[in-house]
Length: 416
Image (cartoon, rainbow, N blue to C red; front, side, top):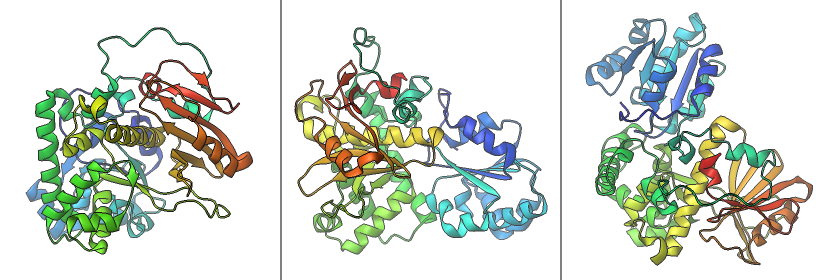
């Protein structure tokens, strides 16, 4: 079960409800404790609920998957379905005999549910929606329309009224809090203890559902090191050297961390003629609160350790926008840009060939060099470049010397 707590409105809920209205199987995937069970209860409160975290139910499903599914009510929610993969084949058989929409609402905490073998067997029968930890817009009970505004060119230059209310969390406080619902109810010290216990439980239990790991302790050490390097280029050889592991082992472990939604590798954007581009992905922890705990950072480090906090801010922005895409436009793809001149754009968003660029600044001041990466990206894209923005810690939306580029406050991420 996901943690109980304040019921935040989840922006993904309408997407799930729409899918249940015309699709036999809907699967909500995402990290443990991100709110999947709570969301399922909100969108389908009138149906039976089965949790495969319960030992007796899991054993019954493992022993006779077809019989287990046949004995379920006409409309049911099955929680943590990745714990009994054989159920997916049984669900397919059941749906082939009765294709009424909304029969099965599944939740899962591991991305193997997206594997081709699974999605192919349920092709035309299942729709998948990914739930992320709470975004800042959801925490503020806002609709989360920043990404929509970017895609539609809705940002306009202008001076905004005074500073945010004093009761609003500061940007460093937002980074440290993260998006898991349960620790948001706790003091900072207790929230950090929750993060540590969460990681320990995930590595000791959930990893077994997706992969064979020789030493879970090694996986935990790697996650801590990735927290220190969140927002940097992924270098498996360097990580292997620091941990005394083989490069192949590091690659395998990172793939496992991706499958359980703790880590994201953001691929490098490149277009075939652009041979000077760097091909290495960047690595980001999905949740900034988890990253600050594992990396030993606090809100007080915002001034004293600006380099690490700046990288963490980049990871934070990437996560906000990837999450918003789930209810804005699931066809969007996300990348980073970096060339051999060290010119980079923190986040590149594409839909087909149409391209948007986003740079992230921790400062509230704008310099002449800001937007250099966006201009390079625009040159690479030509007519496919839609627009670019520099996110910064100021309050006003300002022009950036290019008709398709603006400077936009970071606060727009949670105020829209």
